Length: 188
Ligand code: URA
Ligand code: SF4
Image (cartoon, rainbow, N blue to C red; front, side, top):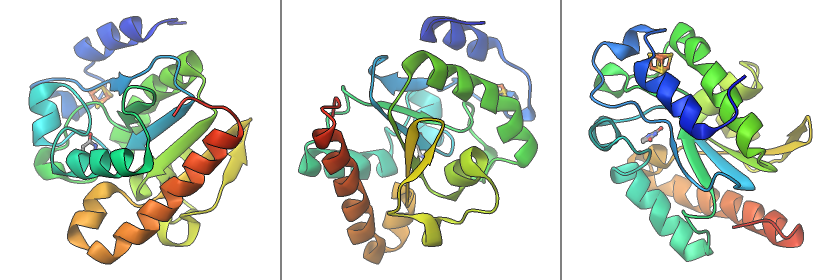
């Protein structure tokens, strides 16, 4: 069993478990606090993330950062990662087999960081973590508790760039996260 994020990162950097290894420039494990109480899970790296090796640094990430600033969530206090650690070509949704091949790394990250709250950003995160029976439109904004972790599904920030009307829901969902964190003295 791997016991540190550095070890996971060393393995991921060399990983060839799925075809997404073929076109990557950098693997993107995650960023933030290794003792975070709150973890954010997106879909997979885009072009900017593939270039920089860090999640959510492109357009969607900038929008998320703005929301964090508005809400008083610190990018340094939380941990941010994705379902797949290598960029899918043309930013397509990761295939089931790619997500499945990569999920062990995410499980390792969760075991090491031990978050109390996991925010699932969009359908890819929601379905791969909680199951295909879930859908983001019906599930967003409602807590789902499993094995002592509270999950909050919400829209992916890229969805807000396509449809401005989703911004208010995203904001309200993150307000619920903030309230829960404050009530339980969690790092935020
Ligand atoms: N979209 C994601 O799902 N993850 C990133 O890291 C960037 C954009
Ligand atoms: Fe390995 Fe995940 Fe990259 Fe696929 S996406 S090559 S499983 S690290």
